[in-house]
Image: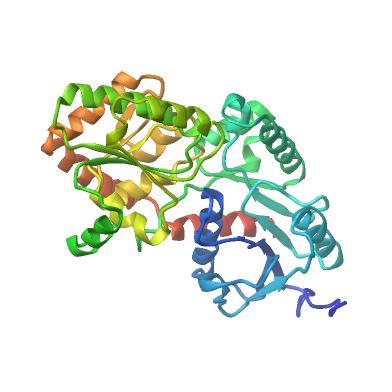
Length: 388
């Protein structure tokens, strides 16, 4: 049964923060899982105040850097034979048995029974704005989970002002319950690299030096078919013998059949490379080598790839949507997600204009410095501590 006093404070002033730290596979993380990992690691770098302690909940023992815990931090493996229902049932039980002072979930799904003081992060509500981009069953689940989170959470964290406004418009959440904490990129990896580091990875994937790069799930939400149409127009403008390729790194997602069909019948399919899943350790070098990073997504809550590209000094073409405008400022070419010809024109400008590439590279590196996980952690700690 365990010690029922395990979470009880040693003094009346003690404060316990419990955090959901379960990341099933750190080698193939989703954007939300990258956020959770980077945020928790940055939160560890912030000093705890006297009487504060942190408990990390996990389905299995923590691994890698996540398992390295500073003083005042501990892990708590919540055993649960089926993976399904761990958050909704097993974490609920734990919170009932030994309630922490504050419970924080870096994703928007909360347990059935939560702590009296609960904070959660809602990353975006694209399933409300653009349900056509989702499998209907997934959209229904996300809607149900998010509505429950809005009802239960004391405070809600969002990654952008655009997402905050969405929460106010769609769910009628009071503005003072929502805090914007912009995200970042892992700048220890995503940064300008030495040529030798880049060349070895290019050889591994047999990539040249003239290519546009897109990284992410090959799905309808990421607007890959618009990118394919744009690349076809770009190649037509360039003529015979043009060396440029379009490189897609990612695994299939919802709507992939549309992308696959388009690829099969494309007139320039020989110039389109699909790499499938690319390990995290190889992405920075490929990104450094790209002529430009292309991010035509229909909808994002923030768009971490924007910061990864800018931090790497890679020219960026990104969709002209509110969160992207917040993140990139004037350090990228912003293009309507609805206009393949405009994307083709932007790609042509990048390919032809070395001065523009250098300008975007400089601006991107500078702009990326506005974002850091340490800053995100400081803002997150401020939200958690405001409840105590």
